[in-house]
Amino acid sequence: MERIRQARTAGTIGIVVGVLWLVEWALEAFVDPSIGSPTWYLTQTLATALLLGTAVLMFGLAAPHPAGDGRVARTILALNWIAWLSLTVGGIGFLTQGNEDNGPLTVFFPIGGILGTLSLLVSGILVAVKRRVLGWQRWAVLIFGIGYLLLGFLQGSDEPTPASQAAELVQYLLLVLLAVAVRTATPTTTQPSTEPARV
Image 1 (tube, rainbow, N blue to C red):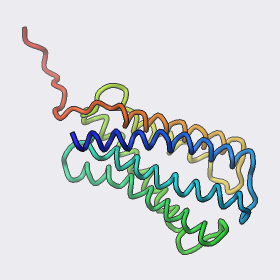
Image 2 (image 1 turned 90 degrees about the vertical axis):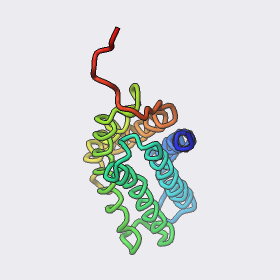
Image 3 (image 1 turned 60 degrees about the vertical axis):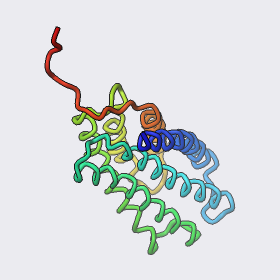
């Protein structure tokens, strides 16, 4: 029960984080602050805090062991929040530098990005196959993982484009969906039986 409570708390935090990601997206899309300006520092501070908040969501996702109690499954689920912590360190690097150039800490961006993409996909498959989560929530991790990967291809350029901004928006909406799934998931400790019911 404690792990379920942790997951639901993290899911609630994740919903708030997802909504604030949408606010941050709007600031970036419509205000587009110049690098080093007070508004830039505001948006970067917000983004860095939200990266940490997303790590909390991923920790909550892993808490009830939705992919099983095995060491491999638990490790792969843990890699999700480790990846977002890595991205948080990259965000701190931007803030300490005062720009978006490469620096000692910004190397954590590609590390977290690659690790997070791969671990999300594998986690989604494991959660779906294990069937420890009931309902549509069972598929939420896989949907988010696939969407995060495919939409990431539209964001390869450093300069924002309408396509990259739209892809980023959809990613944040999928994050809200994942947070709702973590908040409302009904886990089961036993795998559903495939045997016909006896009368």
